[in-house]
Structure formats: structure tokens, C-alpha cells
Length: 451
Image 1 (spheres, rainbow, N blue to C red):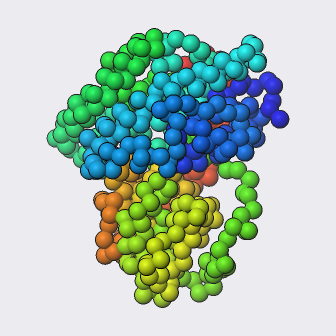
Image 2: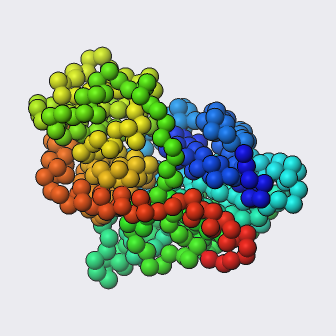
């Protein structure tokens, strides 16, 4: 039952499992804390949010899609090489062109709450990749929230003089000359993003908003809201001396009461849970979007076979998924369509994955080091960050060889620094109270406290 003294929350979410999974966790934790939450996402995710008790407003039109629609909706993207051009194209097609539909859904949710609860404050918690709410911070026509707080569930993409260009995968600068080189790289990124940024400003003006030419599009989600809360500890992101005061860290993800998932376990689960012979358990999963198992899963199976002291647990990332029937499964390998991170990661010695933010955060929450192979979306950035943090071996490709995976796993198992680093970040997360950080910032903004 919602606490009637608390403000009403509208929570946006970019369509996709990698966004829906963390946002439903945050929404559920806020409802357990007494908040009423109205979620805004694509129609295909309605049940996910309504099942946890959210009210729901679905995005309509071009912005209404699910993970399974991506290849048919944007077939050109699959033909593009990972890099700045692909990133700019993706930004324009799936994050900017959807803004009118996303904005309409957000304003519908705000209007409904105001009509049903006159006089009560409405706070927008805007997921970091959901660009449809940004016009509200630049004077767009129509309903607006009383407070606007960004929620970060992806690597921070904001411009910084301290860092290499976003998603370049380059290491931190170690000299003034390297900093100058990276500054040129940021300028090149601005040039690459000229088209998407122009489209964004055009949409902004069409909806009555005022463009802000001083703020690069990548920076807007961080500097325009009243607050931006990154859902991890500072130790899981690069340090930035030029971050705005509105950017804060929530420390991690809220911990929900653990569901009983025993009925969903495969027949061989006790072998993993008990691990009576003390084998190295290697967890392999390449995420929920890119399902070509030849990228990571098949090379990992090949890399780790014929190791009697190793148990390889392959999770395919989607209920009902299966490997091709011609795939040979070694004696030391177990394959299942779906397991939760919270089930497998506490038992794993190493996580071999694609470097996606959600999987990385979950792995470090359990103190499990990684071997990562990621180059699409923002995975090159996340892979570089955790390599810098000393908690992962970064293979610097999205399609590693078996030899590279084997060497990476052996490096993590043989050098204690990786496990120790993962444990340090786990301790940072365990010491945090993410929901208190969110609610404290909600109350500060409503009270007029500036960042």
C-alpha cells in the first residue's frame, strides 16, 4: 500500500531486457518503501511492470518495440562495423527518433497522476537512455514533473577532459599529450554526432523546447536533470574531476527479498551448488540481445573443455533458447536456457561475458571477477573500465578465439588481484543504501535544495 504522504513517481524505461531488468528492481524496491510508481515503457513490457505492482503507460508508435524486434526494425545496423558511425546511427534511430512517442507517454502518465491526485507532487525518475523525457527540462509544452532525477544503469557517457572518448576502449591518459589527443577525439565524436544532435534539436523545437548548444547531446541526461544518480559505487566508474555536482552515486542496486527459484533449477544444479570436489566454476553468458552463440559461448566451451578441475556453466540468456543440435557439449560443461545472476554468480570463480553493464554490475555485486569480450553498444567502454579497475581481463573484441578466452580465464584464476578487486567493489556495494540515496535526493529537490 502506497504511503499517501509520499510524492508520486513516474519511472521511465528504455525498451529492452537490459533496461527493464534493473528498472523493475528499482521500482519494486521503491514500492516496498511506500511509493506509488507509474512505469513508462513499451507495450511488450507491460506485464513485467504490472506483475510487480506498477501502474503502467505504454509507449505507442515508432518507439514501441521489444528486444526481438531490433533486427527487423533496424536491419541496417547489423551490417555496420562497431565504431563511431554505428554508434551515431544507433543513437539517431533508436534513441532520438523515438523521442516524440516517449515524450507523449511520459506526459500522459504525469497528466493522469495530476488529475487523479490534485496537489500532490509528481517526480520523474528517468532512466539514463530514455531521451524522450529530456525536452521537459528545456521547456517543452505540456505536463511537467515537480522534480526530474536521472537514473543511471549504463556506463556514464558524459564528456570529460580526464577520459578517452566514450566507447573508444582506450586507457586513461597518462600525460598532457595524451589528454590533448583525447580532447581531439571528443571533438571528432561531436562531429560524428552532428546529424543526431541536429535531429534532437529539431525535435526539441517542434515540442516547444529550447535547444542548448552549449551542452553536447551525450551530456544532456547528466546535466539537465535536477539530479543524476548512477546505480553503482564510484569504484565501478572512471573518476572525473569535472563531473557536475548533480551527478551522484547510489552505490549499487537495491536488494530485494530473494525469490524461491528452486523449482526452476536444472537437474544437475546440486553438482554446482555443492561443488564437493572444489572445481573452478566458470560461468559463461553473452547477454540477452546478441544471441549468436558463435561470438562467445561456443569459443568458451571449446576453450575450457578437457579441464577435469573446471565446471563450465553456460547460460543462454533467454527462456527456451537452445544450442544447435550439432554442438558438441564436453563432459565438463552444463548448458541451460536461463538462470538468474543471483543464483549462479555467488558460486562462480570467473564470469566470461560480453562486458554489458548489467552483467558486470551483478558480477561485482557478488565479488566475481570477469573475462570480457565486448565491442557493440557501450560494451567496449564498460570492458575498458573494469580492466582499469583491476577486476577483469579485457579481450578487446566481441568475437574472441578459444585461445584468448582460455588465456583470460587462466590469468584471472592465477592472479589474486582480480578476485581481490572484485571483492573491494562488492564491499562498496554492500555498504550502500541505494533506495535511501534516491529518496534523499527526491526530498532535497522537492525542498528546493540545489545540487
